[in-house]
Length: 283
Image (cartoon, rainbow, N blue to C red):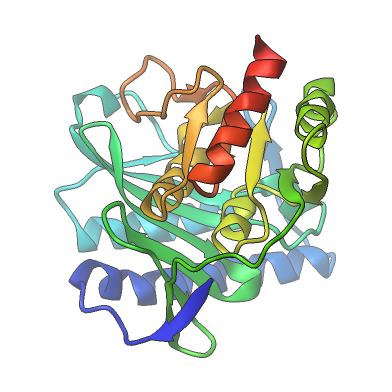
């Protein structure tokens, strides 16, 4: 739950607001052009995943702006070279368009993910949702903010006692066909009814912050820029995101930027349920 509040006084957050506002407008413009059937470039990367002109345009804009804002901090972006990253103890981690497949399928559930990594840990996180004109932002040690670009209003996450709900809300991707997902849900349903909520990309992390998803299992690989911002925001409210071995992800440390699958949970109560179901699936 988010409640209306005063604007934060943090300089970094306030300087990022106009940058992300412009980035979301760029992405919305590209999306509207694509949905209208105008000429639009889509290519296949070496890993066979798609990249569009929207990914590249937002990436170029944010790289330029971050270089001005924090010239001493390098940027590890999905759309750039990663060869120098192991020399960095601090970096921005960027996905200029998380949910490219959602974008291509004309689903509104795509985001811009940005996080700050220090000594392999996410210390600052930001997820912007262009189609909703909002962003979620905050530090690991503080409750996050929500900002509306269109209404220019600030809200703050409030820890509140949930109204009793007999069901567990489980977030799934639109392409969650692996039988492990049903096995995972079947285990939870032995004790508690389950409501399935399908959504794309890091948008599911935003739904978790809003109380619309309690547990989000993912049994296929992701990349560091897919999870870092979401993990940081969840950890800041008392939830978390862990590997399939139940260990929190660290960043810019391993030989590859690929993650294994993960389990994300909104709070400690859901953590117990999430990890018990994981043990049932993975043994």
